[in-house]
Length: 637
Image (cartoon, rainbow, N blue to C red):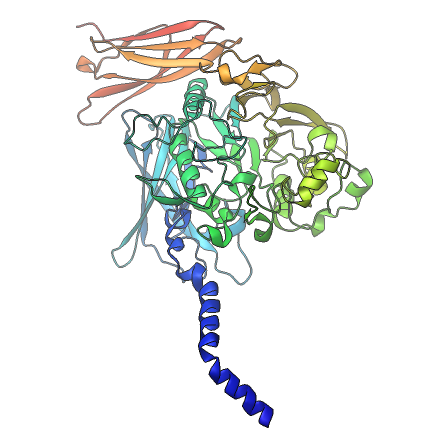
């Protein structure tokens, strides 16, 4: 009894210390929930709210004169909240990246609650109310074939309204073609001189424009690349990840107009802002730099959640007519493995190599048919199960194409984009660096399971990024005849300003009648260069590249016309080069005369009182040619 009294007396004596420790412990645990950091980051600036399909990163390509099913979630993905009844919907579309945008009202024919068909993560689950509104809108046949921002408004029974807009979300086309093209861009890595990464290169890269200091030119290289893609005008683009860097700092004062931001917020919104200049629909797949989590040192954000707030689902599929595409999340690691740690020398996560979760195979290098044989597709879950089911449901498509950041096949199935080291268990220095957290761990699961699904699902083409270099090979279909083309593509950024055999480029894929007609600028693997002077297939001093491979400009004339100037530095003819040319509204509404090209379509700036007419112009530009396309005002009657 006396010992108990002694303990009590000591506790009373040191109660202030106990109180301080208790308060400190509570503060440490509660800080993430009560600190001002909750006001930082993308969590307060989500760009996807109620309109969850189509989105900027998961757009819809739809034929004019047909119906489009739009998905609207009035709960903003808070599925634990009561379902929100919506009385009626209205919809409108506004042309994107247009000098004189036009707006069209879209008729809504029906709105039905049901599970999402576009977000695999939000499909129906037993015991959960995962409903969203499936809203059918009609695309008028008179709608100009163009890229549109889409707005959907829900009217509530109490008279309130919920409105959400997604930019660059709808591409209205006259028809789907069997002879079409798409561009793959990857590893853009948006950052500026505020990043102190030792290998960062700032050639043609400056500080983010702030509207205050004219010396801040931004990512000049990326602006030039977007201009080139707008001129090439593929039917769509696929971006295969690593849009930002995101591993240099957690919080930093960026001064006016941004102030204190996370690196993710600063770089990703910069990327988003610059990509709004693209006049082509873009489908996105997540990369390792886009997928980390900040933990307690940043804004307490999981960047998987931020991806959903900006681009859409972590993995999804889409169609271009009879052609089927899958955009995968090959950075499929749990949160604990994606959380960044400040190692003083660098900020790093435990894992950033490839993984597909869902009960597939454990990591081992190479390809082994016996290991293929023991993978039971019927027992797969998660993303792997979705890949299995999605491919099985689209065996009637003319082609199946997979887009992913890390390629599970590259170099004859070696697994180099999955392995912690490029040469597993053999390279002493890479092993040593991995031990201390500098090489980036991997050894992820599901690699062979994915390859088996690609093989049995008759995937025709797989495109990827991550390694900043070109590589093209084939994978046999292990269950029978045929093969899959595997194309790894160089980065869009300048990875160095020194001599290199890699260069900023893009893969221009041409499809014809269900086959890959072309995907190389030069054989056997080389991408299209973004800059003139690139020695494709050789060594280029990247620090000397400054001129875009395709230079484009529009000059207005005093007489009301305009001249388009296109200079083609490529070794190939530029077929169907595209531009929008805005001119003063012609007297009497008569069309301008064109020389040096052809008019594909046009629209006026206003239905009631037009001030300008926008012409959609096409022309062919031979290798090395400077092409002039002139619009001249109509002669007086």
